[in-house]
Length: 96
Length: 96
Image (tube, rainbow over all chains, first blue to last red; front, side, top):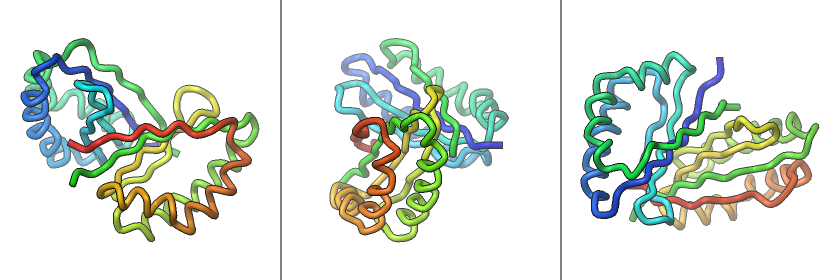
């Protein structure tokens, strides 16, 4: 079974960038510490103000589902939502 | 100095996918083995046939330049070029 990559694009409301980054600073270590099926999870700023991308990698579909169902993702994701300007765009990839 | 992320999008000519993937199978371990400033370098297939994305991360601009100037990147990159359908699209990101 191939690893699954994800590139998530997140648009943050103007002025909410610091709050968004602070929540993510809790989320990223929680993912890495609690998800044995996650091998990469990192937040980046793009060249467009307020637009971020998360690069992610999981050991297959079950690991990606475990991420989405995890307590830390649900709890901290609920704190991210009020910072966002729209629904995240999720691109799913297959590792070669 | 922040880490630099790269998402490289590569379009491969129809029928050249296996050749492209074989060259990349040499390139990726060469990057990880020879570039202390590289922390991530992984090839993924997208949902579009023949379109690949590489997720990359470097410890700053000097490390990214070292990657581009490296012998393995120049040599193996020359072997990738005949597989491509156009110039790679490179998106540069700043790690949060």
